[in-house]
Image (cartoon, rainbow, N blue to C red; front, side, top):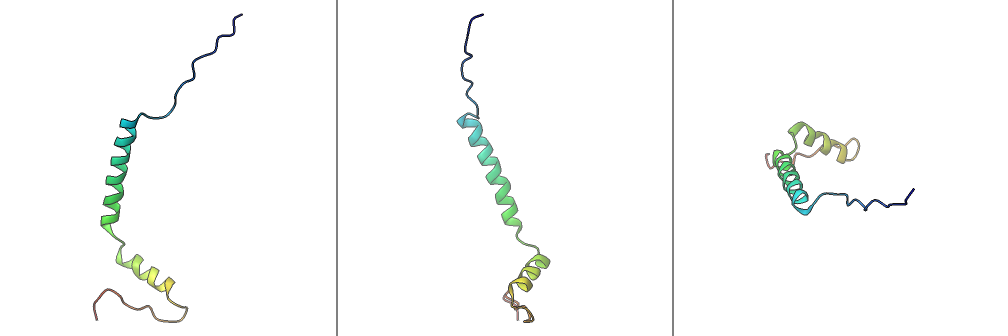
Length: 63
């Protein structure tokens, strides 16, 4: 029986495929960022960030 080594298989994706995936991920991420945070979540975050017992301050520019 002969001891033949298999050639090492190069794993991973080529640069073109990596680039395409990167562009698609950036496009998806940009879309999510553009959507912003819903008002009800922003209000919850303000309440969590404010000291306990202190009313949350409305920082949306409206008085």
